[in-house]
Image (tube, rainbow, N blue to C red; front, side):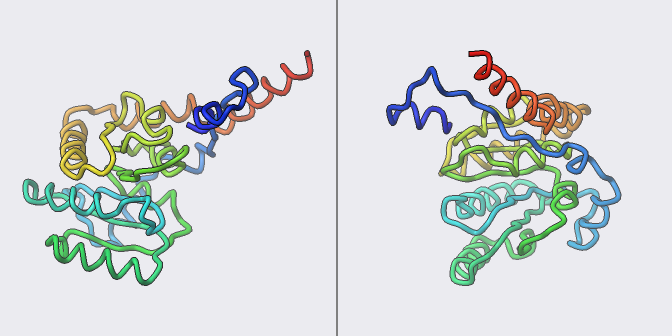
Amino acid sequence: AGAGYHIAQGFPKGKIRVIPNGIDTERFSPNLEARKRIRAEWGINENERLIGLIGRLDPMKDHATFLRAASLLQKERDDVRFVCVGRDPADYKQELHRMGKELGLTEQLIWIGERIDMFAVYNALDILCLSSYGEGLPNVVIEAMSCGVPAVVTDVGDSADIVGDTGIVVPPKEPEALANGLKLMLERLRDESLLSEKTRGRISSQFSQEMLVQKTSEVLASLLTK
């Protein structure tokens, strides 16, 4: 997405190389103990599916669309809970909390502030949701997938390229489309026994620190040979 933007601004296409970010896939990895600990802390039963939006409370993250999609989904399923994790400026926090209550999500929705144990938070989820209407390369999607958590994302920035065939991509700012995407992912979790392994494998092969170093080295070496 960054390359496309700069090319559109007139930067020479032939001088641009894209190197995706890379994460520590050993730190962000499946952890059953962490999953049980966080879910117990939040009061989530193992027979419940937990869908999480991770990110600061900022209009661009579009929590409003996530909340509306959650409201639609909870009318069809009684085994789904939702959590929002991230920094929460007071004024906007109050506005979103009020919206959640108006949508009837008081019992199904949990609000969590900023956390430092993100690998554990990701492990507690069954699905990561990215509802943003603007992104570059969202690290939260990569980190969650590295923990084996599949994602439903809006088609912004590089989100679709990250999830590939392991995730579901929907248009931004469309609560009904997001709700349908989440419903489809819940069905995939039920039917695809290897979805978690496939999700993690995609990150290990394309967005690891090792791949970041390799691709950076290749670009630098190509410059030196010239």
